[in-house]
Image (tube, rainbow, N blue to C red):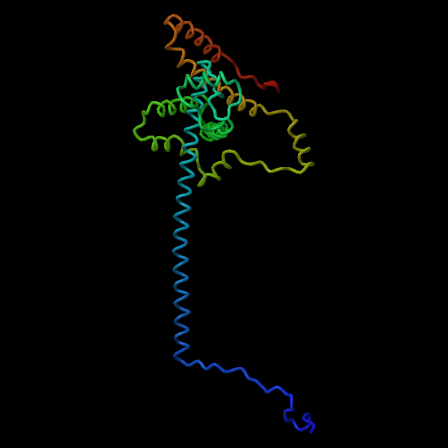
Length: 280
């Protein structure tokens, strides 16, 4: 028999199959809808909980970053004072740092004089701290309009108070000292703000930049560079005076004071030149 003509199943034909039809009643649909709503509700609540935890963590991180930056500035101030004292006392300042590989006798002498095991960090790390301080000092002059002498005196007074424990609340005093010069909300932002990264230029642009740099430096740039450098001289001399005053006689102090008065008279009588030499 021709099964193709009759439409009857052949001897080896597979029986027809149909997917079962799932019948969901009104009650079942309502239950599924309530379950979906419940899952959505719980997911939304979880997002709120996670966002709250994230916000609290971010605030904690910002506070920690700010505390870290303030501590960095205080530490740099104290390091600066120690370097001055070492210079006056002829102590090898660098020998106090971890990883020092120079003259071991100088290190032993420095550790003995300081009565300690030295700094638990390297000189390179300390230099990173002082770079942050130098950037803030620059901001105090440029943004705050303070003279190098005033900046140096402010840092000297703050450092002395830290060393002697004169502050009733060191944290509050530290905030008052530095907060006006810090505007970033995180440690990374603060460091980038104080020491911004310079993008790498293509070779051609580097040549152009080098050509531009070869142009004469402006008077204002020279003056700013000199004031920045002279502020360091005054700061160093201030530390020298503090150390020297108690170690010399009254007559010797009078001799030094007379020389300083003569220098002060020369400074007051000096005239600003219309243009400084390029090598100034």
